[in-house]
Length: 258
Ligand code: MG
Ligand code: MG
Image (cartoon, rainbow, N blue to C red; front, side, top):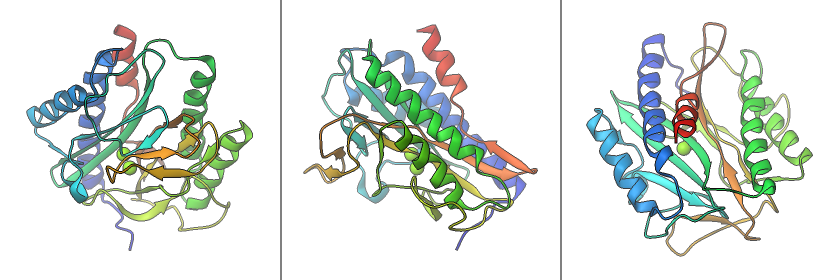
């Protein structure tokens, strides 16, 4: 069943998502050639704990770290390690926080140094797909309207949409009902109602849609080895509109200062 949230619960979800955004903003200036992905993870974990949260992904279904750090052809669920970021990489940093009993969940894909125009376009289109999906998150519409908007736009730009992983409801659990696929049909799926809180998270591949899992049991990669991008906002439906609980602005301000 779908757990619709009260106004007070939405405010708690906002706090958790703001801590996620601040965590992203803390590591954003450090995302440069030469840094190990495990170093970003350690800084994020410390920052989350120092600010009264608990890393939401650490030990979730046995995940070993606080961030999912997914580089280039890695789509999501990348495990931080000794890999050193290099010029031209892209890195999706997915972060979760549990605070006051509620989860925050948001992801941002960062360019490392100078990336190719081709890759810049992938990042831009993936973020635009997220916002086009978000535009459909209106009372009376259905989840499928979000899904369709994302798929239609991504495919119109020559990209493909990962099928195996989807957005989701978020609240006292990290993954609640409903599922929010990044592909689908208009007018299908659950109706969007007051109090719905969902994470919308397009995972868009430059090449084909198929993915494979690494032997580590976590990392999901594109089968064709081409890059993939991932942006995720957690949002609430209330006060007659969409309320973005996560925040990319503070991430981008931190990047601009870098
Ligand atoms: Mg996430
Ligand atoms: Mg998520």
